[in-house]
Image (cartoon, rainbow, N blue to C red):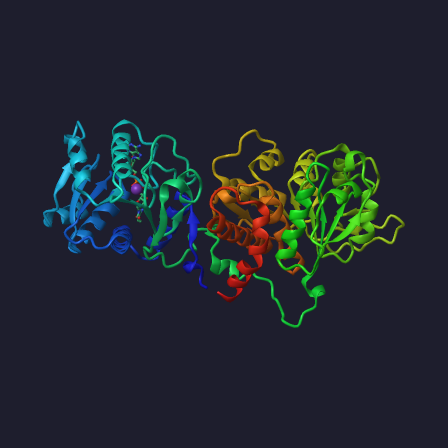
Length: 543
Ligand SMILES: NC(=O)C1=CN([C@@H]2O[C@H](COP(=O)(O)OP(=O)(O)OC[C@H]3O[C@@H](n4cnc5c(N)ncnc54)[C@H](O)[C@@H]3O)[C@@H](O)[C@H]2O)[C@H](O)CC1
Ligand SMILES: [K+]
């Protein structure tokens, strides 16, 4: 599929670059705006038909977002809608306003509506409000603009028959970070002009956008923008599926070793193993202490590798020898779910990554790709591609420059925001989750899955995917364990780290959506995802 057809997600700056690149290639700003406004009108007519002889109130702001609104207003009037303009702080009469005047489209001005009565009256009559106040050039709305926004939101709350459509962004939502510093329009639909702005997919902005559609504006090529995010869609996920030859034996689908669990979290190990199984791995082995094994109710298909444990069943550093003996032959390692942070476990994790300097040479660790395994008595066993999750991340975060021990593009890190803060050594994450994940992935040279209502998957080469899968049903203990297992299972089947992370996030999210439909917003447990994963995967494969 050509790049242009993929739903790119951009910052305001990247959008500007794409537009400037288009203008350099011969289009004009006026043409871009005409296509944007026409596209908005088309989306509105598809979304809220019939509008003939229905009142449409178009809010017009001072910038090009307002310009789009004037173009759309003209097209909607030509389609038979009864359009009224409500102009806020727009100076001068440009061609698009002139064209509305030639159609005698009624025009109200905020400047002469001190008490807001004109707006209130127009809102009461309208069946649809089109928000063309502010777009990518917005600063946080203050006083007079905030009053207009609050009046629109109040009317929409009171009347279920009123639809609000935002042009490019709901006014008041930050284009790059989705923040809503003061107030913002609550839209039922946002028509993104040309490309989806990042703020539409980052919370809380995502919650103001409603349904999101894209109105093409003729960006013939996207070479103007270097690294853009892309929305992770089913069609994208489908391209990432590992092959599933009908005549294959289980060895073809790889083996996953899961180092997980502790006396407090035996279930995390179970969910992680089951996630790996349900993603299609050929064989899953749980390496943990005997105490945890006695507590965990494992699927019968999971094989067990009891390893040395310390106090309270915590996996201890001596487990390195057990792991070294068994790791060869595994195509994926998952480290972390429910591990706990006992001192003994901390030593194990640091030793696995060669960060525990109390011993000269770990028997297990990352051997630089291509470096021959030494045939010394302390032969080092290379770790397979590794998913590092939960306490695996929390323990790594305690070692300075931990990421320098990892061979490039060998791991998938799956932090939630708290784990990301610890890995970055910051008290607060920056608002722009995409930039945060992208910079970390490039610095650490690993795939990073920054989990959240919108999950960002970032590759070391700068590419980022955003999964728009906010789902309260997934905000449940163990959901992350299942995801980590799915990703490890996909790596075992031959997916490269970034592909496994993206496909894993998609499958996990789709299963979560299925569970929410079946069980509702509350009360879904992570285990409910497991039986849904194979059918979600099958539908993706045959879709
Ligand atoms: N560039 C193009 O050819 C196209 C742009 N598209 C649309 O245009 C907007 C971006 O336009 P821009 O003029 O840069 O920004 P805004 O329309 O958001 O308006 C900025 C304008 O408003 C003033 N302003 C900002 N915040 C406030 C505030 N809180 N209070 C008062 N005034 C404020 C600011 O000073 C500027 O004057 C983009 O979103 C698209 O909708 C087309 O879609 C494609 C072509
Ligand atoms: K807007």
